[in-house]
Image (cartoon, rainbow, N blue to C red):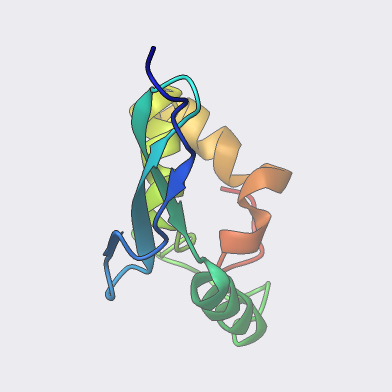
Length: 109
């Protein structure tokens, strides 16, 4: 008889200092191994907030004006959901409440 697996959780398994993404190996009680990736987005949200505060809502913008800054894991989630590849769905997402913390300007995309 095999012993029960323990929940293995090493928070320092792999950390990307540049993006703040942290990947760790998790072994569940049923023996399933998987990687879990998290990312601290505090600095990205702070940057977006400061950027929003420094622009006027009435300022004229060019075609390539930045809309926001999103964490890598949010972008991967958007790709997985099929939003990133579709310009209309991506535009709708940028105007949603979900994207609000990452918006660098207050205007409709």
